[in-house]
Length: 296
Image 1: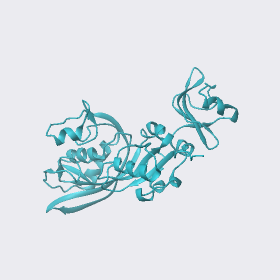
Image 2 (image 1 turned 45 degrees about the vertical axis):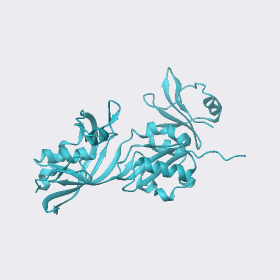
Image 3 (image 1 turned 180 degrees about the vertical axis):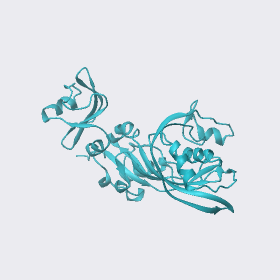
Image 4 (image 1 turned 135 degrees about the vertical axis):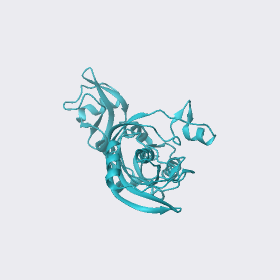
């Protein structure tokens, strides 16, 4: 009897250099399946927690991608680049000597519900084309501002340094932001409010929703044993409720069951039975309306 294809959630510690797509390709090869996707892209120059869905786990990615994410980053204030990170060409380098009081005051303005203009060199699409492709082809890109929430923006350490002969201020920061928050844009905007320019030197994602660095495995160590079950992933990432054994077969056949008592009615809920994720559903007219049925 053939073995069942792998399914679950895989948390990878993406190294600096490869793209998120390259990490997905490595997982496909290691697990022997083409059905692998990721939630929340990391740029090649960024490392850390990258959440992958494998097999039926890809059906969870749309729910995981919207989770908040936590980063640790180093800002360089006094040097601006075209990409707002260290990989881009320097646009201007006036230098900067910023004090802690001024920096923390400006950071507080970029905390909470804010309007942010994403970096022009990003994966956002304009008329079907990626913004970074437009920039590389010589076109001027002006992305519209959009609302994001920065729930934490903490200064961990700051120094006065010299970079390429230019006096700069570096700031190591912690950022917790909603999906779609660009840390590079925060570096640019904080610097602008301080009367200078800035970019990100280093960026590491230390948490994505319910998945942390401690859950992550290096790409070269990926094996089926590293997969988290769909039930475990759902418990970490979304509202969930346990349903009785009498409902399992009905859910598997897509039969609408009465909405489980105690489950929130205003959001998607994972329906679990023991260690199985049966479905993701919302309440509609007092019954479960299935967004995805994952029962075997």
